[in-house]
Image (cartoon, rainbow, N blue to C red; front, side):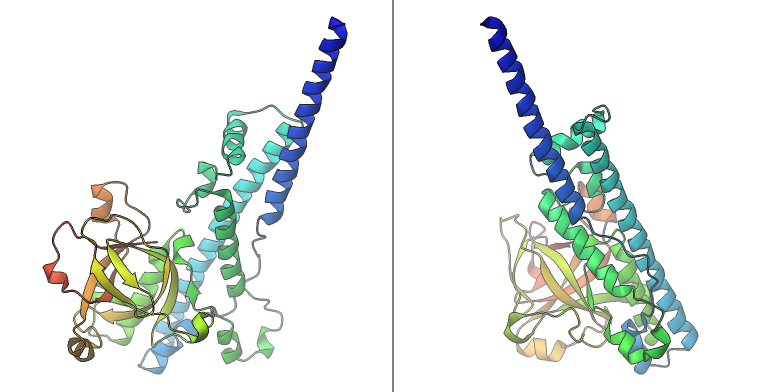
Length: 335
């Protein structure tokens, strides 16, 4: 009887292990199926982003070509980075699948990944620039969103000669998911450079951005919505230290004690010269102020990061006078 009990217990343990392995391998296959395929197609045209600059100025063709090349190179770098990131995830999942299937030993990396995935969390090594993607489902959504954005930028070139430049430009998404970029500052610097080339009296160091509200019919937002002059749409920006009204694009009040972040918002960013911010007369009549807010690529880890981590100066309209804010009422933007 004792032998029968031991055999039954051994069979029970074997069955349980098989069930765990089956669920785990199926889960891994599901994750693999959700990973995006990063396109190998070549980018066709990004002139649409800079056409407004050319139409309103004496921007030379050589200058326009420089801007286009800078943007295309930045997008290629982001695509390469995404491809490497997805490749890393695939490699780890393949190792995990083989380990659970008994085809390889459980390495330290495999065991660490199991601990994260069992809790529905993203392994630290996978995040890289996506530090805020704690949960696996959020991580998968973010890399798919970035893949979709880049996929819209890279088109088949075989029939490009049959398309007009205007048609190609109309395919360009105006919405930049900067919070998913490895190097978001490069995109902002390119638009700053474009503005300084148009208005030659302005140094690129004097160029900042005004954040304008996203207004659209029925609350919907198309990635191809027309941008304000020289503007482009960014998504995923969080506000720290102030209450914000998305319909008006205004900061309503600075927080006295709260240190909470807002939900992510989208803004139209319009490059301007810091010494000639727009709408001053209208805002004065409405008792509104331009409030300068630093933009960081991520939440700074220490005071030193706050000092060196700013990637852009963003001006938001506010109902309060920014000069009257205390040192404890700091307002920041984060991607």
